[in-house]
Length: 210
Image 1: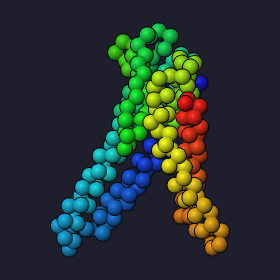
Image 2 (image 1 turned 45 degrees about the vertical axis):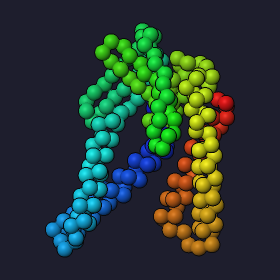
Image 3 (image 1 turned 180 degrees about the vertical axis):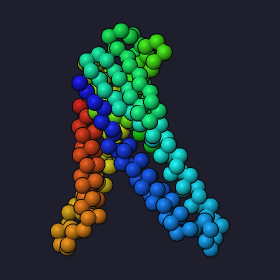
């Protein structure tokens, strides 16, 4: 049995947006900024940010799903909208591979499965272990056209990310060595470590595909 694990980078950016906009939304209500003496422009900006927070929160609740693959059976569970899709890959011939662009031109892969009225789409924008999830019906995934196109497009950007994250990692390491460590620095250190791991993993996968 396989379970979908959410993409590290996608999860990280959504959490950043939610934490930032959610904190500002909470402070705006707790400090009564809407009814206070703040200028109109500030109130409008805070209202827009609060709206962004609410929209993203509902979007995540709507899109959140648990993907389970048990042998040939793909099960997509959407707990917040009470929806379950099931597709038996051994009984369907509708298998569509494609690439799409998101987040400043980054290329992602997806595969769409259709069986009757049901459709399940799996992408590496959503799932970190995409290759593992779809390996059961594509043994030559590293030679797949979509995979090679993604590797050619994203490789240089991942190298740039590796340099930036490595510099930030060294900075955090030195900064926490010569003074007392606080909880915020520990959190940033482990987040950077996780992102660094995810970047190296992608670089190795891209080199393997190329």
